[in-house]
Length: 542
Image (tube, rainbow, N blue to C red; front, side, top):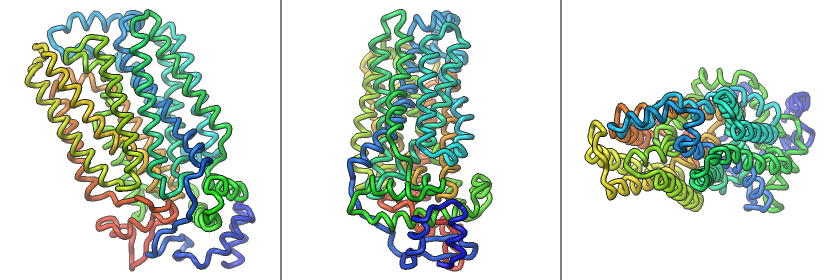
């Protein structure tokens, strides 16, 4: 390596240990292009060795627990919105409207004010996610998770003690800021810490904890629904999982990629030794990380602009938009929010509706457990295909039953056996999501971005997801009132579109190290036209 390159690396803050590793890196399957961008050759992807150590497992466990906070909040709002003491205190006009809307089962809970209680969190989360990229890059993944945990605790305390709507909304917005920061940092933390052979399963842990949070929230709602103060317990307990991630993050080390980017090369090597174990080729992995960071430093600013304007980043841009959009349009998110209200619509009583939400959460959690055993064995695309077909069938069945038994005007009460059938198909739909889009909606964005746009790409993924979550939570009950049973046919059509899209445009990323991910774009039948010119890849080392 030229001495000028080593001097340049030193001047940019990369520690001596990393520079030495860089200097030893001539024998790898890498080539340098004009402008100094280092890209993989067509050789095989690197395997750095090492196993699933206790250290990496505990590190990823704490990081994944960020999903517990998000999941608890997703599950808690729908059940609380169905509690009469909560509605009487904050939204008495909703009870009056429900009484006058008995002639139309689809419109029992159609209230923009009530849905604003749920959706306000995601407006705040959207704004937080827009700045989270810079904060994550400057302070590191660990610091951002600490910030997210603290904000969640504050939000839970405020909402649990709320005495008016203003206080309720402020608390929800604090929770939203926590969502924006933890959703940015935790998936990156998991992807950068996990060994490539286990990355899918460990990154899917975020969605597992999210599902656990939803199930916990549904159980809490069911237990507190009969008490006049139950809604306070349900909302206030959001602070409990916040303590878990905050205390756990205090004992974590930051990711090697983040440490190298902030000029702490010795710390990066120590972190790799800790999580990879004695059998891993730590120097080889650190060399590739350092090369990736060195390439990223040459164009450190303007990550969003580069992703939007450079032809070589076209596949990353498309998937940064498509994956979170399709994730939301599966329809599972709004069902997680409003499951008790949907089950009330099809004829279940209050207790049965809350229990239906508990069953739904348990099915989601079980399917996610299954996904962790198969995601790194069969790959990403197989799960996408199977889950997509299953979701389409179930949503069409739900639309048919509701249309036939409630009627177009919502004037007919659904017989109990058909209501149970709706519950069964809803559970099967949730299971299809749980072993496909559920975990993979977090796994894929954390894998595919080069290091120079990784924080920006994850921020785009989170912000688009939160924006669409806000739109859907604010509009779902109105859509159900106006589109009626066709609401579920609408989501089925989107799942069919996204399944075809994944089959055509998503390359398989199973088992490929992050540092070698650029190879997949140059081999893909469509994306190679954007990233390969004159037989060479233009994609920066990931």
